[in-house]
Image 1 (spheres, rainbow, N blue to C red):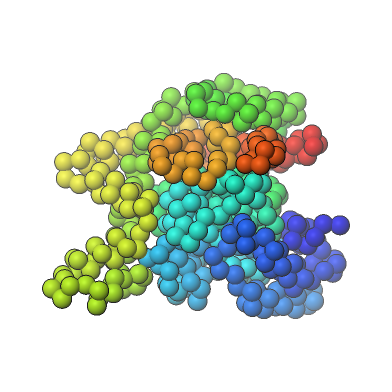
Image 2: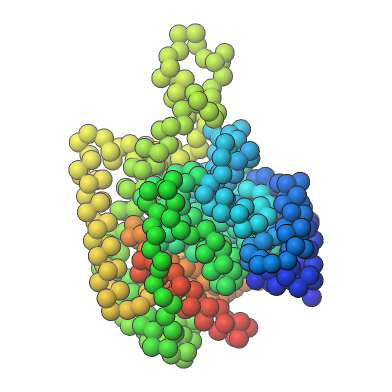
Length: 490
């Protein structure tokens, strides 16, 4: 029998309903697993041991009363540390917010608490969600559970690693340009970036407001569906949310899957490509049809994303000035004639990490007088062209498929010296955020690599499935078929 911490959401729900174990037992098992595994993995920045056990006890009381039960009642979950939980330190992995205590719950947290979920703690991430490796955290990097010498991806690396290492049953992350899907791919778990506006961003620390979206990271596609349905829906506190119910699920038989030529060209690791192609061939056997398509503006997606994202970062992070809250340069360490501007600049210089500073400066530059039209305004026009590419493609196909990442999980330090090579890890994911459409990364195989000791390690490969706006349930259907095929192959 599997250890309790290895169970899925669906497993826990079934076991609790049948009184095979209690929520306290599952929660205790997860907490013990954190104590065992996290000194190496470093998925968590904070663990709410006492409150988690209290939440589990309340869940057990509700279960004993009988009646209708939520599928998340008593299920231990982890939260990325840019999602506010009232009364908890919420840092976004930045020194500038090291002591910041959230005054209220994010809407997704309110919804999960209403469902009776148990919140175990806050997970590590790239500072302010800026990165693709979780190496940019001010509090130390997270390691990949499949090979501790490699990164877990980012920026939701802590959330993905916690799920992969069974330090929680499932987790929430945020995705601005691939920050759920890419670490899900690297860690061999399921990651969903919902349609923009499908999940409230109220209480999510903003990175780039037109791109950010909260989503689930889970062990199975079925769990992703459960967690997504719990957090989705409109919210009066987020004017970008939608009441759209979503398109109905489509059957795999006769489903048209678009294969963009731009996602299988230069820069793609052949082992990643082979795993993806094998997964697609099995979908054909199950009744799907592969259709060659083109997304002609894909080559411009990365540049467009880094202009728009950085501009929004520059605006959103202007609030962190060290005056009202957060890290502040000690007044007695400053010169007596220091100005307010000096305090402001010194606090931000000392509080922000290198990557955050880089993006703030890039964004401020592109928004500055004389450069706005040449960069930001032009990038918004290209963004529309990228959206139109997807619209055209979805007039001919039901979903689009390709690799989540062009590369396998890389070793620590391998890409930090060259920011551009790091940014290229998101080359297949950023266009989805620019277009606001949903996408899901599902494990589709593994590739062998050698670690520093010369031993073989199996590294996960993710297949990215992309759908039209509000088509999450079709993505679940196709992803479940990929999951079944992989399990049968194993």
